[in-house]
Length: 372
View 1: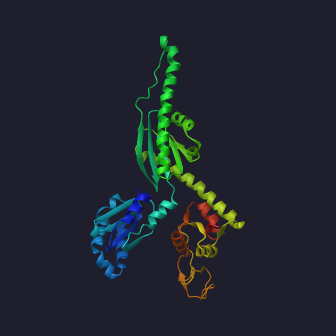
View 2: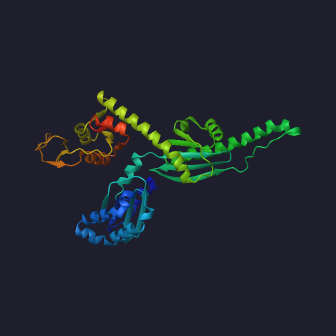
View 3: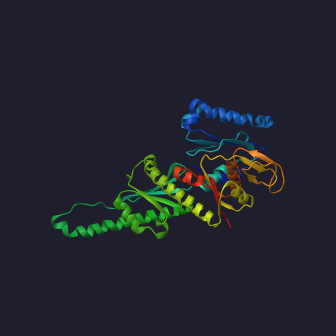
C-alpha cells in the first residue's frame, strides 16, 4: 500500500541523466492464464523506440525475469519503477485494475497512482473491546493494520455475593471508569490517525456493548464519518477484518454511486453546473471547467477529435466545427475524456452498478460536474 508521501519522495529522487522505467500491468487471474500478461509486457517493450529499448535493456530484463518468477504473489495489477543505474526498484501490488502502460523517461510516471489517491476513498476501521483497540486502513481493496492500543489494567467483572454484594455496584462503576478511560485514549489516538491519513469514512467494529460505549465518547466530527459497523472478534486477523468490512464498503460505495448519478441527472436537466453527453463534456473539458467526470464502466464511444483545439464530436465530420482544423478519428472518446480530466486534476468516478449504468446510458453514458 502506498501513500502520497511515497510518491512525492519518488518524484524528488535524483536520477540525473539516467532513465527510469515505469510499468503498469494488469495481472489479474484471467491475465495470468497462459501468462497472457507477459505477452502484453513484451508487446509494450516492442512499442518503444529501439534506442530507448537499448538504453534501458537491464531494467527490461529485470522486469521480465520478475514477471516470470513472481506471478503466484500477484493481485490484480502491478506497478514497478526501475532504474538499475541508480539501484532503484519499487513494486506496488494493487487489488484494482490499471491501464497497461510502459513509460521510459528521465523521471518516474507517478500520475496514475496520484489519480488513485485522488479518486478512491480510504476507510478507517476502529476495532474495540474493553481492553484493546486496533486501527486499520482499507484502501483499494487491501487492508493494513496501523497499531494497537491496549490497557491491561482494566479490571474484569467478577461475580460477587454474600457480604460482598453491597460492593458490587461500586466495583462496576470502577470497571466502567477504566473502560471509558481506555476508550477515550483509543479515540484520541484514532482521531490523530484519521487526520494524518486524510480519512473521511469510518467503520467501527467489535462487540455491541463496546461499540455502544464507544459511541458515547466519539465527538460529532468523527461520528459523521461513520458509514457502518461490524461485529468482529478482537484478535481477528487483518484478512478476517477485511472480509467483514468489504461488504460494508461496497454497499456504501453503491449508495454514493446512486446519489452521484441522481444528482448529475437532476443538476444537468436544471443547467445547474452539470452536463451530460460526450459533446458537452468535451466542450467543458476544453475550457478546463470540469470538477468531476462521471463515466459508465467499459463504455466506448467512437468519434472525431480536432488535433488543433481539442473539439470532439460523435458526428462524422471532415474538419473541426470550431476552428476548421484537421480532425482525426478516435476509437474511444470516453478514454480521451478521462485522460483530459486527469491531466486537469479533475476527479473521475466510474459507475459500475448495472442499474445506475443504465440510467446514465440513457443520457449519453458520460457527464460532468462543473467548477463554475
